Image (cartoon, rainbow, N blue to C red; front, side, top):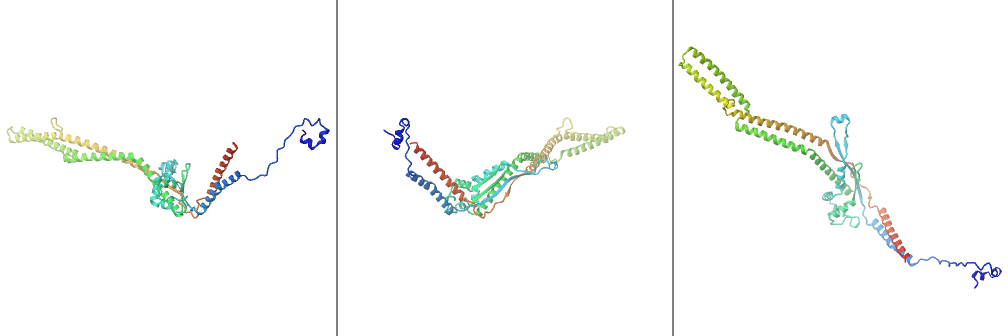
Length: 400
């Protein structure tokens, strides 16, 4: 059977039969049909319209017709710690004059996001009423009768905190549906934060002076007990100062000793010039006996005689013990008072306060919601999901 080439050119076949007998036959594929839309193509188009175009259009219509304008108020502050150095440090150029406490700033950063602050601001400004005003905007407003957990979650959406740990600066952006209300919330956040820092500063001062205050209280109590014991001793003995009474007793003894010496001299003179039975001699002897007995009694009171009971000696000993206790208590009190004053001065030298570098601002135009950005993000997300779904579909279809 002749090939197609031989049928098309019979002259060539007859002229060279030996040359074309070993040639290979090449089959040519038929030409492609014209491109046309098939059902699967229409399915992809419809899925794009339903999954991407329609939701994006609904989102755009909602953003530009129903979404309420949101006004932002910004407040910026930082925690400052002023340290007033001593005169020596100032003259010597030692130390810094001010600084910031990063730990206090970290506490403040967490406090602004806490449920405690949300409840405090809600009590003052009624956040439920402020954030549920736009009834048409069901996406961006707060649901009515929201729980405290829902309010805290919504607060995290409407209040954004920008914190730089390196510098300790905090900037808070507050959003609401009214510019005045946004500024009121920002101002309330600043005031509550300032109160928190003052509380932390007071706690720090209390901790710094607590031990000195305890020692001062103990010293005061010791001094009170010492003075009360000394007062009780004086009331019971009816002696204000035993030392003064002893001096008086010693003066009396000295006077009696002098009188006794004079009486002895008189008796010696009488014995030389008169008989022993002379009444004057007897009178002098009786006087000597009385004076000696009085001297013995006075010495017994003072405790200077061997067989005396030592009433005044015991009183003086008790008084000296009480007086030593009082002097020690007074010195302890003065030392504790000085230490407490030093601790208080040191604590007051280091004070924390909240310094605002940006006061709560009042917005003139609505900055949120960012409709164009939100619409673009939604469209991109929908397009990405649709693209992945189509690729997965064709991948599964090609594997069949």
